[in-house]
Length: 368
Image (cartoon, rainbow, N blue to C red; front, side):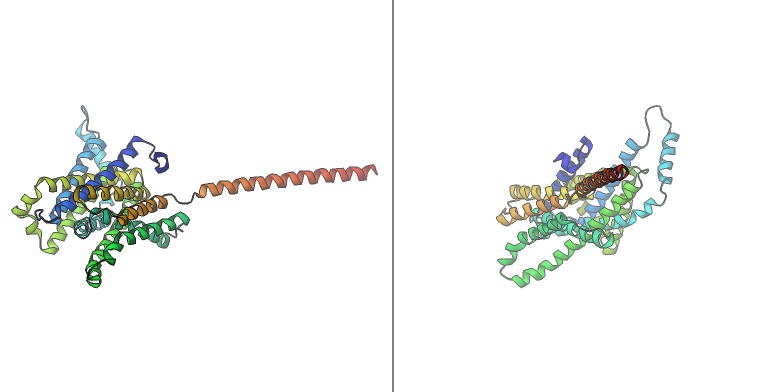
């Protein structure tokens, strides 16, 4: 598996496994915090606090590992490095406004969508991001989907239908359920679109501007995120509510603090994931999230683990893995190259035999 996924170093393996485990823990804790009996809290205030913690972590990592502030070095040297990193792409902070806004919407929708879906269902349905990614890449970037990718899209779509089929088929009031679920499905679609667009654009910035350290780019991202989240609170008229002492006390409880810490860590790891790996491996990581979240939800919350859930998890997991393994065009090119070389050798051999035959005929004519 390690060779298959290209995880050929301890760094890549740590990033991949840490990303999966952190997201599973995050989804489970958020789901637990929104269940009946759990104390109410302002989700947006949690998001903005999380973005602030991410900003602090990114700044700490940047000045610890990217700026050479070591024993015996001068502050001027570190300042010169900071200036050189900033001037390498002076417009980069403004370019991060777009993905920061998309991630702001995405993060705020996590809480509302996890109230409508359990963690396993949520992760299964979120795999439709791969479908959207494939369709957008084919439409915008003129990238043709190969056979494996179309099969993967089919597996993912079938898995999503299987997971929700029991609820729709045996609902007492089908029309009411479908009407009530329409808002949740639309919010999930918006969240998927934000995730796809923000992830692709963030990966583009991280890889095209390699001269700027990942931690500094994370600083730009989270600085914009904090500003956008404050703007969301102002537009909603909930800034005072988010800063109320009662809400801050609720946020200060151990479960919510754990959510904040885990989501902050996920944000930092995501930047390194996109820098050292790619978006395709993020899709593979999502497949592992589906399986692990479903099992954890069953073990800790008693979420039914029926045959539909098992089949959906397997289908989505297989679809994600299949989507991440497109038809190897390199082998086809190798076969074509071998065939071309063989045909060339045949032409040369036929040409050589033809020349030899011509020489024999000419010799016979001369002897005659």
